[in-house]
Length: 492
Ligand SMILES: [Zn+2]
Ligand SMILES: [Zn+2]
Image (cartoon, rainbow, N blue to C red):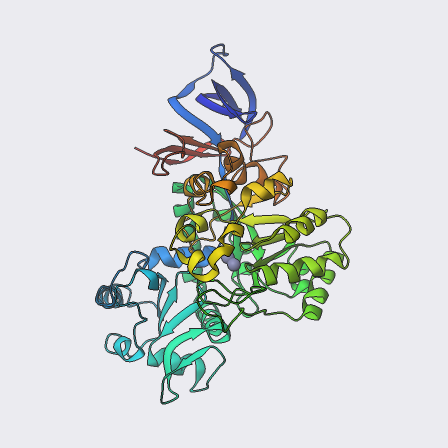
C-alpha cells in the first residue's frame, strides 16, 4: 500500500513542510510544499519528522534486565535500597538470582556502599548482585560471594580490617561477577530481556540499534543472532569477544563493543596519563598489554572485521591509537573507539589521521559534566578535554551517538539535548550536528549510510515523529515511531 506522511520533514539538514510517499517499506518520493499526489495521508500536523533514531551503543541484555528488575538510579538512601530489594525478592522469586543496576553512590545520603551483612539480612539463600551505575563496581551478599568466588580472594575485592571481603568488588573481581550472571542466565530469560529492551528502545524513537552483547564465556550474541527475525527494529550485533574465528564462523562482520581497554572514571579504573584528582595514588588500569592489543587488532583487521573497543581515559585511548598507527593504512573497515571521553589535542590529531570513528555518549556530559560533578571530581582542570565534540567535528572526525544503556537511558532525545547543552560551552555542537550523531553518522558507523539514517528517496521508511525539538529540554512527546513504513509505536 502506498500512503503519504505529512509533517515538517528533516531533509538536507533542515525542516521543511511536505509529504513523504511511502511504498514497499521505503520512501519513494518527497514532496516539499503543498502539492502532492492523491494517496491516503497520515497527517502529523505540526510535528517534526526525523529519520528513525539509531543508538550506536546499547547493552541489550543489561537494558532488558534493568527493565525486568527495578532501576536503582533514583534511590537516595540505603533504607530505600533495602526496601526495593526485599520487594523484588518477593515479586521475582522465579529468577535464579537477583540483579540490580544503576546504584548511584553519589546520590546515596549515607555516602557509602551497603555492607555485605546488611544485604544478607534481606537475601541469604540466593545470589544478590548490585551493579553501580558505571558497571565497574558491584556489591554482593555473602551467598553470592561464596557461589561466585568459592572463598578465593581475587584482585579488586575490597577487604575489611580483618581481611574479609566487604562485598564491594572492582576491577577483575567485578568482571567475574558480570561474567557469572551472564553465563548462568537461562536462554529464555535472555530472550525475554532482549524483548524488553526492544520495547524500551522503540518507545524512545529508536528504529536501529547496535547491541553490545556477550563475552568470552557468555554466548548471548548467538542467542540474539538466532532470534534476530523476531524483532521489529534492526539490531546490529557487536559480539564482545576476542575469538576472531568464532565471529567469522557466525558470519558476523564486526567484533567488540565494550571490550575493555580500561575501566571507568567513577571506579578510578579508567586509564589516565596523570593521576586522578581525588585519588593521586592511581592512574587507572590498562587491561591489555601493548602486544596483546596489537595481535588482536591486527588479526581482526586482516580478517576484515570492523572493531570496537571501550577506551575512556587518555592513556587507554593513546594505547589504542598507537596500536593502530603500527599497521592501519586507511580505515576502510571503520574501526571505532567507544566512549573516548578524556582527550587532548595530540590524540585528536592522531585520531583524525587514522580516520577512526568515535562512538560517543553525550548524556555522559549531562550526568557527569560541569561543576562539582563526577568529571570534575576525578579530573579537576582536565574537564576542559572531556567529550570535546566541537573540537572533534572541527577536525571532521566522524562521531556516532549512543547511550551505553543501561548506563544512561536509551533516549536519543536526551543525547541530542546533552550535545547541544554541553557543560563546556566551547564544545557544544548545533542541532543538525547533534541529530546526525543519532541518524546519518550512526548509520555510517555500521555501513548502512545508503539505507537508513536520512529521509531520502529509496531509503528505508524509518521515522520518528516529534511534537517539538530537544533544544531547551528533552522531555518531548514522541507521536509515533515508524519502521520500514509500519507504525511500531504510537504515543497518545
Ligand atoms: Zn564501555
Ligand atoms: Zn558499553
